[in-house]
Image (cartoon, rainbow, N blue to C red):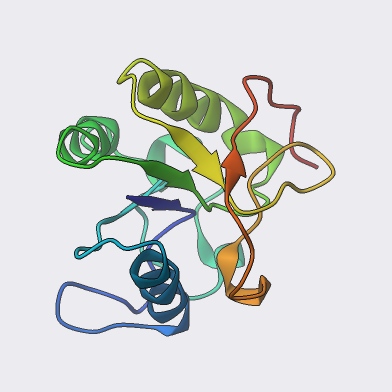
Amino acid sequence: MFVGQNPSVASADVSDPTCNKEVRFAKRWGYTGYVKTNILDWRATNPKDVPHDPSLACSPDNLPHVLTEAAQVDEILMAYGKLHKRYLDIVMRTVRALRETGKPLNCLKLNKDGSAQHPLYIRDDTQRISFPSFLNAPD
């Protein structure tokens, strides 16, 4: 399961470049399915269009949905990129809850602040690494 930033144009019926890239990673690792969830559930093509108010950017239904999906997978890959620090509580709550599932929590690379890099511009041959148990505040 890939955990992204927020939904953009992709849906269950329409893919986008990020989802296409994640599917390539999943296939290369031998997975036969693909599950996508997001830290925030506000749909916006441009992250700047996500509401500044965290309670609007992420509904109360999002984390339970993420955890329901996590229960069905073998591995969780954090891939949310750099989120503004106003969303740090949501990120921390999500990471904590995903750790509690006991599933492997990985990422492709880390940003300088310790957050998971967005997969779109990461090389296809990048190996996943364990997502650290610490997380610094995003810029």
